[in-house]
Length: 229
Image: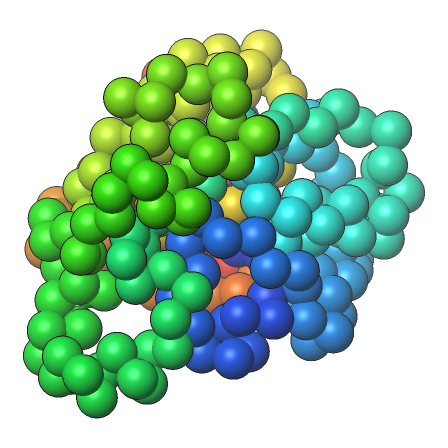
């Protein structure tokens, strides 16, 4: 039996301000740092450890991982950053107030953008500074793979190659893997691990700072999963 730990990062400053965040890179709030410490304490109190960690290119996930490793005395454990684990890209909504967007477009439209499986947000152009090709951290990535605004379906299609090509082979070596990522990139992984339909996955809530433990068989099929705390 293999074990996989999934964790959504702690609250960011923009989440505190109720803004669409996506691939933007705000820091953790003080509450978010405390949520990360609590997650580390939970894992430690239940005698979990991990052999390797995967996280996104975004500092709210990277810093959450660091705080957890520090709390657990595992700062020496290898960390691999993969852009495919980034949050869903919210296109032209990114950085804007959710309240103001709701007032402008109506709650029904905003919920379609936020919660449907295949609806994309308003798109940005190649020239918009929010297009990832303008960010130095994505310089080595083919621009055709970078998004102008993603649906959850797009996020699933982006995340799964990371699982299949990078993470799954490491799990099959018997290593316990921790993935610290984001609400929608973790939804993508849970959709695959739990074999959920599009209708089911849009209803799944990923709690902040609460570790989810997956126990997998030799084919990496889910035997059971549960939250700590």
